[in-house]
Image (cartoon, rainbow, N blue to C red):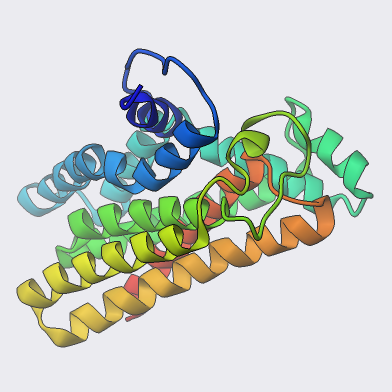
Length: 257
């Protein structure tokens, strides 16, 4: 069905209730990853706007607004990508061969590497977003950061990154997205965000936005390359980790630029 891609994208990236796709195959997986950035626009914009209103119109400090917004994003995504980040950190940090590292990632518990990386990532996200909220730029920053995270995940599903194992989400989406489609989609979203920010705040802000998006995608893709080298390819966990690290990088670069 033509709606399978949308259903899979919404059901994978958010907790918004939708009917399950009639079939889950390469075609629907490709569509879902390409549509991933689009399905995040409205819910993340709502979260960002509410956080910005809270900080701007009350005495709420940006740090608290950032914490609430990041918490709502975790709720929206069922903390699925954060869980993937922790599992990936445990797997890569273990130093074990690929097969054993993948088994570590499958476990339901979180080890010391996962805890440290997860806590640091959340702390950085909250501090960075809090600063942007204090500047009045939090709403747009949330949308740009989250969409960039999904772009990094989409690029990690191009043929350059095979699946690390034959089952799971990684096996379904690995190599499903044509390279040209991934980069064309990335270019389109980058131009859209840079153009919107440029019209509202001028060329320097547009350049800062572009640099932040590129930086976030590079970090996400580097993690996918590390997963390919250490684990043999990508998994659902490494995709989630790529998205979270890309999002974090965007927020940090937006603060710095």
